[in-house]
Length: 512
Image 1 (cartoon, one colour):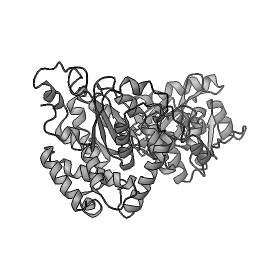
Image 2: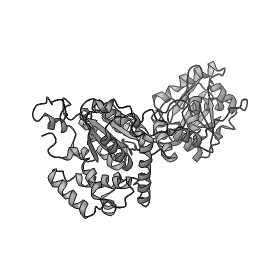
Image 3: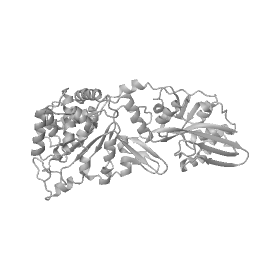
Image 4: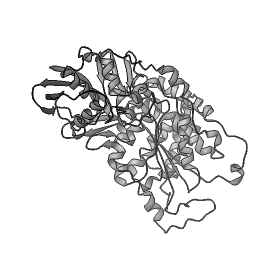
């Protein structure tokens, strides 16, 4: 008997329906075709054990299974469940009349229990698009899949529950998630707050400007000055997720297997902080079976690179193109996949090898030229993509011991959201541009033109501070954001003055 069950293969962050055709005839052979990998071929042994423990016999027949379309590679153990159900139905041990209503995914243990799998959310979205009535998944994945509306999601603990449900002998309760209620309930719950930070008012202001305009940021300062502590609080002042952003980010983390069990939607912007020993592939994505890298896991959030000069130079260089294009393409001989990578880059670094160059109290112990050599570990083209460069100085004792709380993240976030609302309105007709940091040269000439006093100030600053030519556009972008924070329609001299102050590393005297 020939029957069909349905599963899906994930490519990038989208899914393709896989039709599992099982033909059961006389003989004792087992064939599995359709470009399965080793994990899929090993399903034979897991299915035999799971069925025996659950009280069912693996048919002693000639079984041919084709996983169509045959030109898409099928990877992982998530096909165990649809393969097992298809085999039983083809052997007429299970009524196959309802199989075309359901998509199924799940890994089988030897005792018949179902283990969670990756990429459930994009598969659920595809199941709804293709008109399936329901989606059967391991219980741990049910809430993640139930985010998708107009699709009945059934969470099962064992294969026996699935068999009895398909046969009509058992009812499985559909998992229901009130997506909007859950999304908005947990959206603004942060572990860290800017009210805990003492002093560092100039750095907090720079981070507010960075958050308001989506600007990349680098913090330069000695050890213990608070660079990492400040960076970790940045997500608390970013505008909250929209539902669309949350869904898109959750899809990426679902494909990478980074969604927590019993979790539905990600409600807060991701904050990724990879170690400086990370490889190129782990940073941008890829591998033999491509997976999203750190820059994609930071999509719609923050990628924090602590101790920037310690990263392998090639790792930093491969980030240059994604920083401009906001996407990364992983190409292989047979296919290519695209992963979104729209993130804010926040980096921190010591000013020199010993860490105390420009320190107000401690002398720098580095030899002549060592500071410049240390700075040269970070290439000019990468620094060119960082709009705000701010020096962080240690906080004096009087500030640390203050009991009066600082301004809260909530108050800062309100100003950031108002500035972002201005930008959304400004760029409403520009596809793919949502913030000042993404402005092209054409948009700069249209929206970031300083007045005569501002232009004169900028000219003097470029000459006296020896600012490089590449700083010009960055200063205009940042000044446009500062003006937006004040709801000013035009860029004034004071806005430019503050923006110029955020270009510490562009001064040619730095490190000399």
